[in-house]
Amino acid sequence: MKYTKDHEWLRVEGDLVVVGITEHAATQLGDVVFVELPEPDTMVAEGDEVCVIESVKAASDILAPVDGEIVAVNQKLVDNPGLVNEDPTGTAWFFKMKLDDLGVLDQLMDEDEYQELIG
Amino acid sequence: MADLVETELLLLGLNALHEELGGKMVPFAGYLMPVQYPDGVMKEHLHTRAAAGLFDVSHMGQVILRPKGSMEALKLAFEALMPVDVLGLAEGRQRYGLFTNDQGGILDDLMFTNRGDHLYVVVNAACKAADIAHMTAGMPRVSVEPVTDRALLALQGPGAEAALEALLPGIAAMRFMDHRVVGDIWVSRSGYTGEDGFEISVPDAQAEGFARKLLAQQGVAPIGLGARDSLRLEAGLCLYGHDIDTTISPVEANLTWAIQKARKTGGAREGGFSGAARILRELAEGPERLRVGLRPEGRAPMREGVELFAPDGTPVGRVTSGGFGPSVNAPIAMGYVARAHVTKGTALLGEVRGKRLPVTVCDLPFHPTTYNR
Picture 1 (tube, chains in turn brown, green):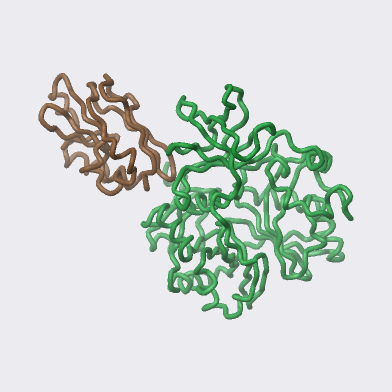
Picture 2 (cartoon, rainbow over the protein chains, first blue to last red):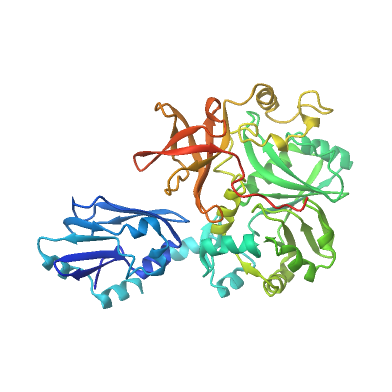
């Protein structure tokens, strides 16, 4: 698993990359009550706001962690936003991306580096 | 830098208890306050509606008004600051009040209690310095005495009565908006959640022990500011600085129930308060805009600042408080809408992240209140 400083995790699954938010992020957000997902088959650039996630407290964005194409989204989160709190690193993935080069993932943090970031 | 900012914040007397309970402490109105405990906003909200929630609201301003002349002169002086009947409030009873400015806008909302030879007032934390200055300047024949050595706790929910009765036998006989002095402890049957409950003023030296005894009662859990906000929103109650401010009149705010007959046109003491010209005119003719309840159709919350439009695209108002209502299990909001669009059931659009989404004008509150009337 790889991580961004924006508290997203990325997991390679075949030739795709699955993206979600970390347990730390889910805890900080609090109870998630609304998720808005991007349209599948959308080209995105690193840093683009691609999802909206709202907790009881506030709204936040999820940014595209790398350049690529969003090829699938997790519709389950729209129907059951609370899944983000229940299983953030498992069934509550947000979207799957196709990348030109999986090598860009090497620039991201590994587990140890991420744990150090969140202290 | 972080240290500097933190030392400027005031600490609640119960700060150590909040930290022990796992409270997430955030700056609010100049104080370091628990926004939530480990249960989180959703569970804390639902717990308050199902059992009992204990809130530390010691940041709020407690003030005693003592007459330099007669009590009647004090009550009449207080009436000059508010479109509210002070003279008619019986001893041992509490009432909601609003300080208005000369333009009829709201300076603050408050609770006041007739305690026989003085009045006891509770004002908003962010406004307390200004309120004390306003009362001092506006009532020269009154001694305005800030109470600075007391905590204020709120115990709210269906389990509140039994929990407090265990500590203060006899309080179960109190009705909504009754006030009692029990030894050193001042108890009001009121609150800010829409639930039955109490607000309890306790001397600082006893506050932590009292809070611990309440938390040891069946069903009592500590509740943070986050759930306090979602509870009051579901109850349709205004948050000062958001739903009401110096530009909004009590009539626009749909708070005309707080203006008793005696102060209205034709009443025994009609007018004679700051902003009377506008407020009496709006009572007679209706306000240009009105605070209404709003139910977004989808699941996306419409938060403060969301602009509202008629179906034809005309701007008609703005959301002043909004979010997710845990007991309603849906997004809810309140806001101001131009008078042509205030009827229950009116279809409007709210602009969220560039998209205009359907929202319907509805009655307040969103969740039925359970005051012990």
